[in-house]
Amino acid sequence: MPRCTVIANWKMHGTQTQARDLARAVRRLVGNRFRAAEVVLAPPFTSLETVRRALAGSRLRLAAQNLYWQPHGAFTGEVSADMLRDAGCSHVIVGHSERRRLFGETNRDVGRKLGAALEASLKPILCVGETLEERRRGDTHRTLSAQLTGALKGVPKSVIESLTVAYEPVWAIGTGRHATPAQVAETHGWIRRALARRFGTASGRAIPIVYGGSVNPDNAAELARVTEVDGVLVGGASLDHQSFAAIVKVFSTEFSTATGKTRTTDK
Ligand code: 13P
Image (cartoon, rainbow, N blue to C red; front, side, top):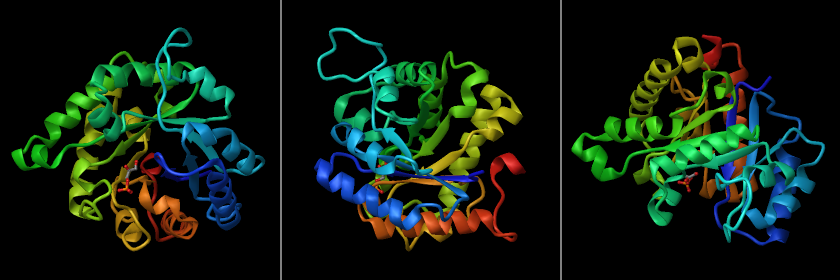
């Protein structure tokens, strides 16, 4: 039973051939080892089928990076939750800050997407996070609160066991500057309490909260040790199979040793 989650977000990188090679390389390195970590790869839409084939028969899971909330229709350029299920996805990233910032996704849009994903039995990875300006102004909690409320409005308690929350401070994404363990601990703790208020203590506790933003093999261990960190969402470093596998190893080790951490659900 995996006790933490390590997700690769490849963003808009790679041809199908490159995606196939990268997925095969990750499978070779991770394969059946490091079993305390659930490992999820999120390639671009065009490589979903290629990566699905590369991962077939393994325990590695497939995610999409986005979806649209309508089931079908005249929505040029969009892809529905059922289409992603059909393509072999078990997970989908929802509300990534790049989608919010560059493509104008609102908290309401994110909520609809999350609802559509849950409806189709896809496991949503809900991204939340503040900008540097919001953090400097002391508005981090206010931003996170609006993002969580918008996304989780109307979500019944019965389906939240498939939800993962990813805390990705915008200022840490792609900058080489990750949030400090103290910042991550404080913010994850706050998110945890917000989830407990929304869904009750036990359910709120059971929702994994992963961290994203400049995670690499050098900082993975200090992040893995932070209480309330249940895994990571990795961008740049996931494009290199050795870096990504090293991060998976760190997390799996931290979560499986007798002296290592227990997951939130075990507490
Ligand atoms: P980086 O790891 O490149 O900072 O990206 C993080 C991210 O946005 C993952 O979704």
